[in-house]
Length: 86
Image (cartoon, rainbow, N blue to C red; front, side, top):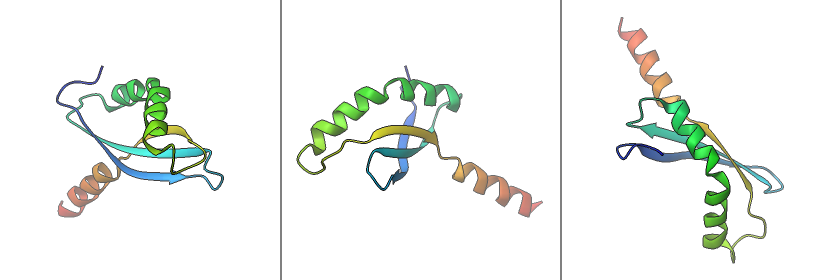
């Protein structure tokens, strides 16, 4: 289970042209091991997809397969900023 202090934010969702796959990029704050947190989320993908389906069942025809990734763009930006300062 994710730690109670872990905050998960969806930063980007990229939907395939046929709406069959959604690539979801997550920003994880407060998690020491982001890879482990991502694996936990991936094991819950079917449950999350079911919940999404319940919420949007009258709005879209196909509920896409959900594939989760870590969005490390903020970490990368901080690293570049640190390098530029030095």
